[in-house]
Amino acid sequence: MSEQDPPVPQGAPSQVPPTPPADPAWAAQGPSGPRARFGRRLVAYLIDAILLGIVYVVFAAIFDQAVGYGLSLLIGIAYFGYLEGGASGQTLGKRALGIRVIDFSSGGPIGYGRGVVRYLGRIVSGVVCLLGYLWMLWDKEKQTWHDKIATSVVVPVQYYPVS
Image 1 (cartoon, one colour):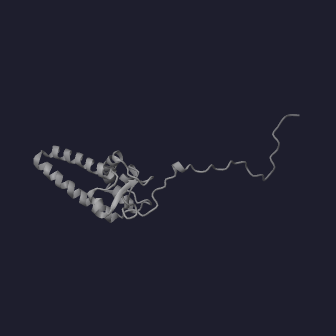
Image 2 (cartoon, rainbow, N blue to C red):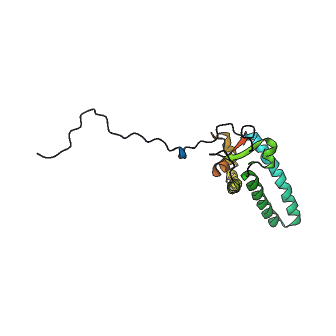
Image 3 (spheres, rainbow, N blue to C red):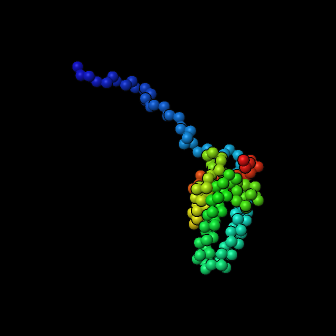
């Protein structure tokens, strides 16, 4: 007699192991409250752009155009990186409109490094006809591309007060 596996009965259920539960660390769960609306974000950005535009005009008058542009870029990085990355998550424009930037996962500040990354991510958002900025209009989490790059989200201060 040869040794063989016992025959499998016809119609027997297959032996598939159960699916393990999802690791909660990998679950993308952002803050549960409302997000800042497109119009508020746009007006806040325009306020910031006007302020930085004034700085650019002053530097362009003092220095040649390339140096003025370079200094304006550095000031933009410092302005957005420091203010959006700080504890309040607010530039002057965001403060005026009552919105702030927070970390998508923790709801806390994004930090200065990610504030700079978020600012530089605006370049990506503007590459294809500003599609990255408009992305929030149909995105479930209302994130632009630069929000996604920095894993941040913009929210109303009334629901997420500054600590």
